[in-house]
Amino acid sequence: MTTVEPTDLLVLLRELEPVVETNLNRHLATAKEWFPHEYVPWSEGRTFDGVLGGEPWEPGQSKLSEVARISLVVNLLTEDNLPSYHHEIATVMGRDGAWGTWVHRWTAEEGRHGIAIRDYLLATRAVDPVELERARMTHMEGGFANAYEGLIESVAYVSFQELATRVSHRNTGAMSGDPVCEQLLARVAADENLHMIFYRNLLNAMFDLAPNQTMQAVTRVATSFQMPGHTIENFGRKSVQIAKAGIYDLRLHHDDVLTPVLRQVKALDRPVTGEGDKAREELVAFMTDLDAQATRFVERREAQRARAKRAG
Image 1 (tube, rainbow, N blue to C red):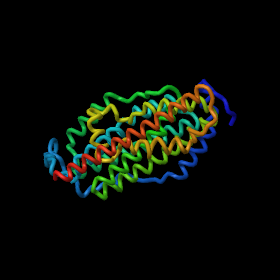
Image 2 (cartoon, rainbow, N blue to C red):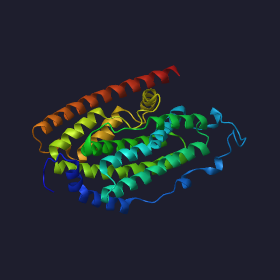
Image 3 (spheres, helix red, strand yellow):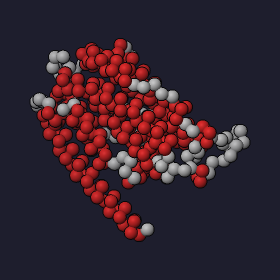
């Protein structure tokens, strides 16, 4: 692959098509077929009140902690916006050739996640079904719009985002206290990991093809990253609760999301010039500051927990 700095989307799509095809074939050979219905404890389910006159939902029916419910709902609502994600990614990557095959395969795999998590929540009566549906409607009515310009920035974003989602799902399951929930979310996280690998490999190829453009794109995305569910109602408050529980916080974002991707694509070791070099300097400064912020957050959280333990 010749090192160039293409500015035209069609040039990028054409140059990267072989990389997409190679990684699509790798993904199809690696991904394991699974079925959402096999991960849901249907025997725990019973009819809700309403049209069929079943049993009303009560908070005491949920065996999950409040923060586990919050995190599960945030994760589910994030998955629910799949139609908007599909539109955005198909608009950037197209529907032709290996690009189009990947877009549709990715969408089909992501679709299982919302199905499985919602069925689990309803079968186990983990959350209020009325509030869950109202939250889904509100969130999806707002849609999702890609905050980044062009193919390179979009791929940089999903490289970080898929890994962030994997971390969130895994940690939510681990702290749920329910082995069924943990098993389900581990399965969902495995999908997210494979998606991250696909996009990360593509981002690596973009660095080979257009190092300066890619460095600028990665820096812009890393320094402005937001989770795809940030438009969920009261997301700020909920994300603070999730961070305090250690499900997803600044330390995890720095250590387990940004750093691994940057390391794998050798972002800080690439031969870049001009604006690419300036972008890398900005990225290094940002990561240093984020590391310090993460340390302060963890120290405050541990101090709060210590005080709460003494008081309790």
